[in-house]
Structure formats: structure tokens, C-alpha cells
Image 1 (cartoon, rainbow, N blue to C red):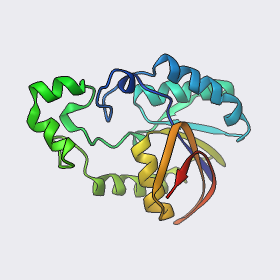
Image 2: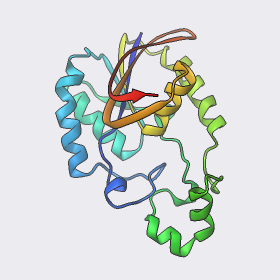
Image 3: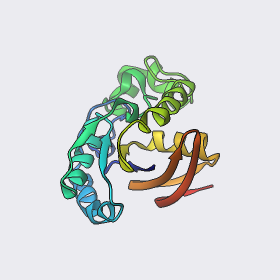
Image 4: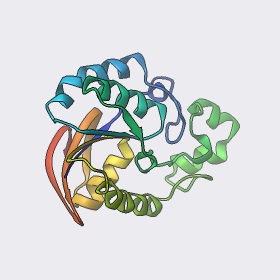
Length: 191
């Protein structure tokens, strides 16, 4: 089975300097354009199933891409972004700095933020995801997700570090049981 993990287009959180994570913010205008500009690229992948994180910025991207293939995007919780921001998800950075300096400082110092998802928990989720994704009756899946999820997939399944990831980048993998191999990378690079 081939799975093409794609990062969503630019979200409003990036434009408004908000903490994303599990903040459920939509795509920006630029993000919608990025998704529309990716339709032709995705059509070449000959996808037969589109899965998406349930967060608005990913679902909007997935729906734009699925429509181009006459498919319907299916919400799938395993693709949800890693919540590193905890209670700050969706909030403006400047407001957190003023009103909740303890949360802001914890994040900026690389510490744990109340309500956040630890990396080990994300890895457990992704391992379970790789097992469950193979149960879908599809040969070529587009899985619209988020940047931190992509970085963890690259690290945990390919043994590489993600160097760069653009909006709407695509990581193509061949998934067969416990075996995961890189088949393509568009808009991202490794260290």
C-alpha cells in the first residue's frame, strides 16, 4: 500500500501568530490557494482514498484535494496534530505572554505545557495509526496531516530528521506490515 502524507496549507494560526496544535483554525486565503494549486499534483498520485486530521485546516485541504478526484475526505483522528501547546492551542502568542507567562515560558524553554501531548504518546499513536491504516481497502491513500506529525513519521519510521517542510508538502511511503519505505518526497527535505 502506498500512503502519501501531506501537510495542510497555511493556516490562520500562522498568519495571526496563534498557537496551532489542537487549535481548530481554518486555512488562510493563501492556504486555500496552496491546496487548490496542489490538486494537479495529487491527481497524478492516483489516490483512491483521502483521510484527514479532523482539524479545520487539514479538513479544508483534504476536501479541496478530494473534490479534484471525485472522492470524499474521511476524518481520521490518528492524523491530528501533536498538541505541544497544551492549554494555549488557538490562542495568540502575545496574549499568552502577558496573561499566562508560566505557560508561555514553559513552551519557550522547551518544557512541558499543561494539557500538551508528550512525544512518547504521539509515537504510540503513530505506531497504532500505521497498523490501522493498512485495514482500509485502498491501494493509494492521501493522508492530510500536520507538520509535527510528519516530522515524527520521518524520525520514527525512516530514521531520518526532517530539515524542511513546506505547506502542502507530500511524503510518499510504501507501507507493508511493519515495513515502511520512502518512495517520494515533495516540498520537504531531510538532514
